[in-house]
Every structure is written in C-alpha cells, then in structure tokens.
Image (cartoon, rainbow, N blue to C red; front, side, top):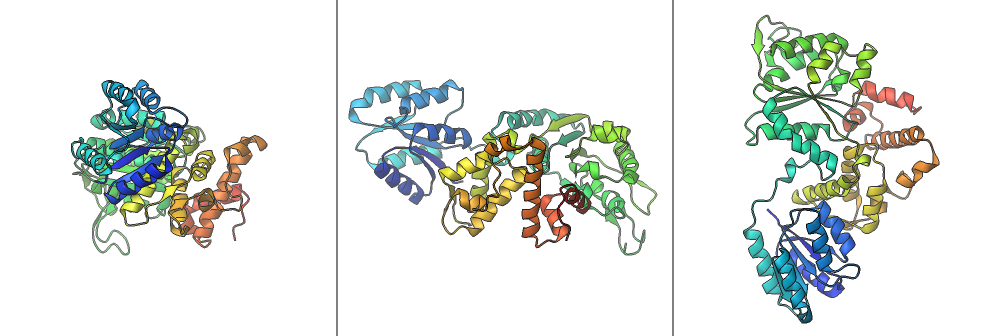
Length: 439
C-alpha cells in the first residue's frame, strides 16, 4: 500500500525539495502552501502522516492543529517543523498530541526515517473502497449499513441517475459479507428487452423457446446466498411486476418452461430514480410490490447537495487511474474551484467521465479547469443559477450532459443509453422532453 503524506510548508524551496524527496522515496505527497488549503485537504483525504511547518502565512501550524483537534476528528500523526527559537511551542504541541518535531536546519534523511517508521507501525488504513463519501449525508448512510446488513430486510435506494445508488448497494453487501464469499448480482431492469426479462430474472429450461439449447439459471438463482440488486426497478414492465412480487414473497422462482420452484435465499436491494409512490398513484407501479421492496428506504442525495464529496471523489478517481499505470494527475486550484462550483446534473457518473476524459486528453499531469470543461462555456456554474428558473437550468444541464454523451458515442442511441445507465426508451423520452433532435 502506498502511504500518502500531507506536507504543509509555505517556503517554496523547502516544500519542493521535501515533496520531491517523499515521492522519490515511494510516498504519495500532497503539498499545501497555507493553512486554509491544508484544512480543506485534510478534510477531504486520509493521510498516513502530516508534516507541517509551525509558521504559515495565514494561520500558525499550532492553531491549525488545535482547530482540527477541536472538531473531534481522528488525526494522523503530526510532525512539526520549527525554528530553534520555537522549540517550547513544539513541546507544547507534543503535549497536545503531536507525534514529533524537527528543528531547522534538519536532516531530510532523518525526517524520512521518522515518517517511514510511523507508516510501518500504523494500523491498516481504512479500506476506502467501503467509504461512500465524507459528507454528512453519505456518512449517515454508511453508518446504517452494518445494522441493515444484519437484518437482511429488503432495501429501496432512491436518487438521481448517476448519484451512486449501486455503490451504496455494494457497500451494503460488503457490510454483510466482508470476506466476499457470497455473490453480488446487479441487473438494470430497464436495459433488458421485455421479451427476455422473465428468462433473465428467473432462468429457463432447455428447449423452453427457440435458442434455449441448454438450461440457464436466472439472476435470482445466481444471487442465491448473496445480494440481488435490481437497478431502475421503476422501469420493470407491468406484466413482470406480478411475477416479481410472487418470487419475492415465495423466495422461490420457476424457470421459463419449467414447473418446479427453485428456492433462493437472497438479500434484495432495489434502486430507482423515479418517485415510486407517485407511480403507484398513477397506476404505473403495483402497490403490493412497492410495499414489498420498500421495507427500508435510503435516499442518495445528488452530488450538488453534497459538495464536500466532489474533491474527495475526484481524488479517488485520479488515484485509481494512477494505480492502473496512468500518469499521476493532480488538480490545480482553478480546477478545484470549477469542480466544486459545477452543479453536476449527471452526478458522480458525470464527474468520473469528466476526469477520465481530461486525464486521457491532457498532456500535462496537472489538470486545470479548461482540461476539465473546455473553453466552450459548456460548464454550467453555481453562480449561473440566479439567471434563470431552476427547472430551466436543470433542463439545460441535462441537455448538455446527454449531448456530450451522444457525441462520445457517435450518436448511437443504444451505446449512449448504456453510458448514461438508462434504457433506450428512457433516453428517447428524455430527448423528446428536452426538444433535442433525434437524428
């Protein structure tokens, strides 16, 4: 595991030398030049060790440390850099919980040895794969998962397209099976042709229909002992809703062309971007099925309502690409501002695609706002909201997002729908509603 070091140092010569040496020694390093950016960074990333100068241009290292302690956060080990005349201050910080200090001029090799020793004796870092975010709303959801995992009750996850509903479902599955011994099967209910959905869900016997040259287990049987995630349950055809209800009630399925029921033991998790209660009132969704899947309800807020997660998610995405052999990318200050000001109509999925596109196209490691959004004015910012009604603004965001997806897929509707995580029918409906050309 690569340990990440937070370096807080305003001196450009010391900062550059230390950050380069840390990276040469195999550490990942984020260099902050003032207390304000350090406070923001420490709130968004997890560090194995923080090395901080006591004298900073906007706030002292001591005050920054005290502020962080006052928030009740669990802090990584702090090593302070101080001048000889401030040793008393450094000792005071040790009494408050800082780990160590070095005095200028210091031996860089000795500092690296201290850092390496601390990293070797750390408890294993929390698995960031299990984290959903650092915002209050996502931490609350994360805190509920162990209790929900123990209950095995049906869970309905709601939220806008791309908000991270499947990630919540996967986290719930991991909470109930941390060793990964049981299956997690995910199915997009709106992406399966209506004439194949029964076979996809329940399986079929050999010879059940033309082309059924062997028996096949459906996703209910594939998920036996684990979790079945039915995404976009609101897209389920009415003709299948009654059959789905029977399977959930009986905990058994009958394959197409078969007669014998096959018992299944699953945790059922459903997700939707629709308001199912409204659909029930309008007759588009069965009321009895709604109450079967709506035992526990989790709502995933859109990314624009949890801005704290934006840079945290961006950092994770860039780290994942670097771990797969891509150039290690960073974000400039203007890129961070642009990311946090943008309203993300496509939510986490759009953020991921934005960063992936910028990483592929950029010739330099540091991504700026133009790398992310281009210079065509495609970026709809928070400040623009005041210029038009909210409904018009959201429609413009959605229209721009779909247009970019269509461009990426060379206008192919099926590929665009798959990229957006919706059905082709849903995509056509959105395009008609948004008055987008269909040719």
